[in-house]
Length: 330
Image 1 (tube, rainbow, N blue to C red):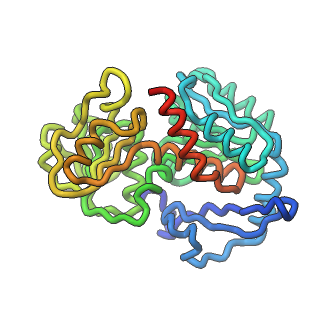
Image 2 (image 1 turned 90 degrees about the vertical axis):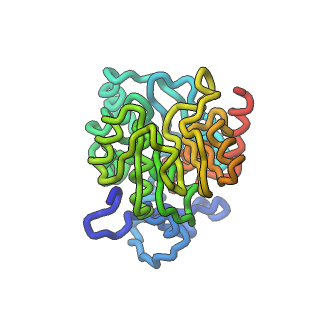
């Protein structure tokens, strides 16, 4: 099962909560099971070693005035600097988050700089997620399974690679159960969706793609079903995920990958520009619940921020700053 250790026990990402009125002291520890997000509420009752308190406190001191980055090519369009700089300001943390254009052939040099300067953290986007995996000291089991990372962070002096796209995908689905999930598209985001759905223990997952060989390859790799693209609307699924670029602002904005919604369920669009795509509008008209890609973007950012700082990125302001920026671009 993707993202689960051999023992079957959920992976735990511990993070500390700090109280500024107490001089920045750790006041409580929250344990978040990435294999089961409800562990955030301590339902597991897992006892974590006291040294985690100290490691998070040291992280805050070490990176108090650190630099954070998002790298990729192209990168100028990224909303990541907006959301992370907002969080740093709101929590009173020193440091800046900036976008830097880095090509694949420049990635090794960036890593050398990152290590030398001991930068605080980094997000990684296309086309670098796969190549970056081989440049870290260690990668999470989930990242290894996906063959890609989107986050760099430090742990006990080692540079760790994680893939928070899976967490970002999962959070909006928390508390929901699905009998059959249908994934439209077979790109990199589909891999994250499959991993998340398997962590959620969705028993039936089917993937379909206009290029059948790509869908078949993913189906074999992850042990899920595969269906011809032409038959997608005839499948009985209660979760339909658009992992294609259809509906994205631009030439394909008036297109949808799913022509007919039947029954009831949830339509989940990875696209977030625009937030309400044709795919979601038609699902809503058919009586389905809908979920835009804004949530996945925000929640993967919040998961990265948690790894870097041990703190929760303020949720309400994170969504507000993203939606405001998207509205300004429309």
